[in-house]
Length: 173
Image 1 (cartoon, rainbow, N blue to C red):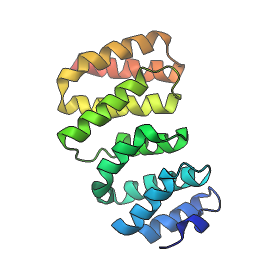
Image 2 (image 1 turned 135 degrees about the vertical axis):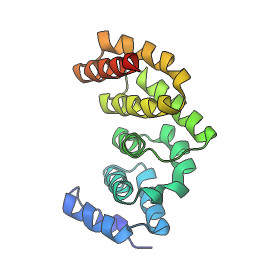
Image 3 (image 1 turned 30 degrees about the horizontal axis):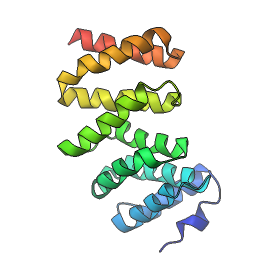
């Protein structure tokens, strides 16, 4: 144990970067940070999820052994910021997923995107994940387009804008 819990004393980028450097691409250290993020203890879990996101940004391969765990934990996370952090990982660094993982993540993303009670960032990252999935499974474009059509009329300004961008990109292809 590296006692990352005591190191996550605040949300500063300097501390996060030092911990990212310490974790590197070590799967055991990465797993330790994942466990802190999954504890659902605010603010510790938020800080840990941010570190996880930064580690994956720098060492994308480190997430491969944790994909099943992350996808399984996503709907159980109570802290919105932790969920957002993990969705950001998938949206910005989409790893190779097997069929079951893609199915589970796609279902979650569609559910959250279509739920007006979800935070805007959760819905935004759900769009990004679904756009990635649609590039591999174009048959899902119709379902995503239907939801985005509604968001382009009734969503927040940011969701309206992103919905229109995605819809326009679908029409061009």
